[in-house]
Image (tube, rainbow, N blue to C red; front, side):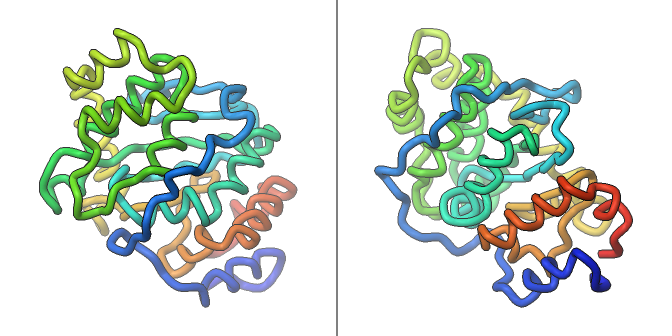
Length: 245
């Protein structure tokens, strides 16, 4: 448990509904790409799997573990804490990192997660990861439906100015980044450690190398609470590092 102090915000999160992949809601087909997305620097990390977005000198690093088919990830991205994280990233207060999992294909059948992760890597090669990531979650199919087909991924890419082209289209159709998809899933599973050998669950957030415990995972879905936590960590990162969780 968190012991008093400035981190009482986590106590609020403890009483929020816990969440994990398995519950979704209809996608927001008309949700626009957030303003300023094209200005964010994005690159592949040295480990070959982490996708890093934002100012590398930001005081707060939020590392997210997501599966493109996960409806709870979609909830975080569209109506949860992600819009506040985007604002902090645009303001250079935070940098956002992604590890993209694809375990739901094996659990539910199909190949939509793997195809989407491959397409996201292809978008990164074009400098369009941020915008495309936004579009995919705004138009996520139902979890049980293997809806991220090549045709659907290419159609959605048409919503991102400058993304479609021979190189991107071929990368999607031919699974050019298949090895990246496999390596990313392996990185996700390693992140679970001995306690969770199949992975920590999606979405999971690690802030400044400290994983949000499962009992506080609800804060990811309360925008105001998550924004307050990010502000507190930015102002006093040393206190976050020393706070018992």
